[in-house]
Length: 260
Ligand SMILES: Cc1cc2nc3c(=O)[nH]c(=O)nc-3n(C[C@H](O)[C@H](O)[C@H](O)COP(=O)(O)OP(=O)(O)OC[C@H]3O[C@@H](n4cnc5c(N)ncnc54)[C@H](O)[C@@H]3O)c2cc1C
Ligand code: FES
Figure (cartoon, rainbow, N blue to C red):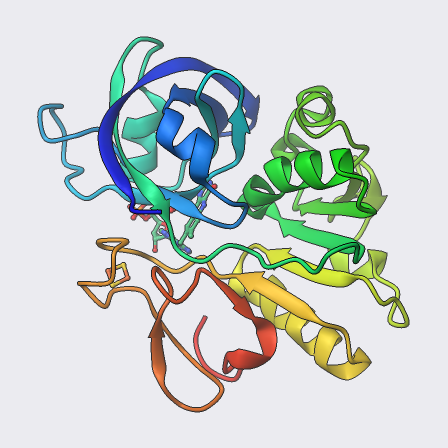
């Protein structure tokens, strides 16, 4: 599918956790063609006053009926702050779907392991795969209870009961997501989250001979393979572009000894 670049109207926006919004856009091309793990570059466009010129990457979090695409957006810096200030009816610049998705084997159970905004690609995935009869676990961790995505909305979107971990223990189980995994399990592991979490997950998978695919959260300039701002080191020593060869990679194809 060739990515589409278009202005998309914001249909709804709501706060779902501290500094975190769930934003749904009218964007039929993304709703109809994206596959879980792919992302879109989202921006406010050059006509909007402010300092943010480059669009930023966000996982496609949800594709609904009527051409709706949902995104989970947590504020980090100027770009995400500008984006979450959009009001219903405003237009955003959307380029996507981009990158390589998770690759599932027919019938095989999956365990989705999410840290922070790494939850996003698993919202649509958990919904569609559980509805198709696949056995799915959604294991989701945050530092503290305030950061946890609105659980009622998460259940509504996924049709699924997530397993929650918080480091402060004020919601779900106290601790980190890895504690929820069985070393002897044979489900396919899918990870998305900050690099330290993915590195720990990759080490868990390597030690226990578990299959794992990860989506990496690299900074991205263009999202389409031209700027080289997103490179990660592969296990054979090459640099690979996360925006076109990823963001989803087999964990054993990456070099986990370097980078953040
Ligand atoms: C494939 C992909 C999918 C993503 N999906 C989502 C998503 O669904 N929801 C979501 O909220 N975010 C997602 N992100 C992260 C999001 O793109 C960044 O938070 C955003 O680019 C930050 O832009 P900014 O202008 O607000 O911050 P900036 O001003 O660019 O940076 C603010 C601070 O955050 C740090 N930072 C920025 N980007 C990253 C990053 N990618 N990793 C680590 N630190 C960073 C900067 O170093 C700086 O300290 C995704 C990233 C990638 C690569
Ligand atoms: S973000 Fe520009 S090459 Fe990947």
